[in-house]
Length: 225
Image (cartoon, rainbow, N blue to C red; front, side, top):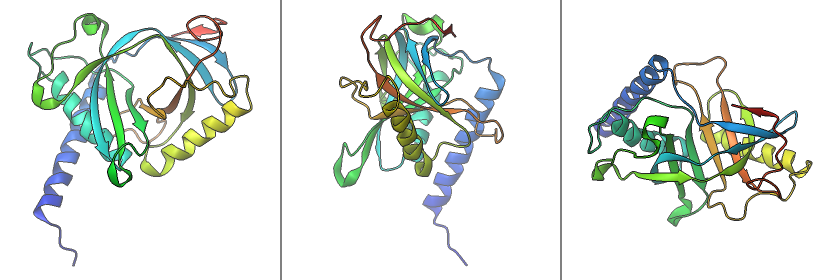
């Protein structure tokens, strides 16, 4: 018989409780998302221009993308539920974005930033998080990202594969060698769905790109969202 330690049981219980809270938030909210313009489109990826926007960011060090995302979102969820100096409750938005810096720490640990897009009401003046949450606002300036969509759950075993597929697609396109040298992240994973949704899940891998033109993008005005 397998013996489960009290600590492992407590961690599993906390994780399950957090998933329930996240699911309730996503299912009950008409969630906002950051606006963007599609500036280039291929069959397996597109390039988007995102305008300047403010996000709340949770830094995490871990060797697991899944654990880092859970850790970061736990703190962000407390923040939007009122753990801020204004006691403001903030509506859920999507996507939740986890940006990844490989091998940034000892023992091949990775650094992550788990980010939450602030709704328009809070863009100009975000509530100040409680200090113990270790959160900070992040102004994401005008930037272009190459985006590949994938289904299922974003997990440790598939996110690198999806990023490699995007890199391969970019290498065969006009955006070859156009990844941003100024970006501090290797790539980001954007997740759009409640953990309770099994069919029709939407995730994306994002990579910053630059090119001559408007705000670093070749602007063709394909579509605005």
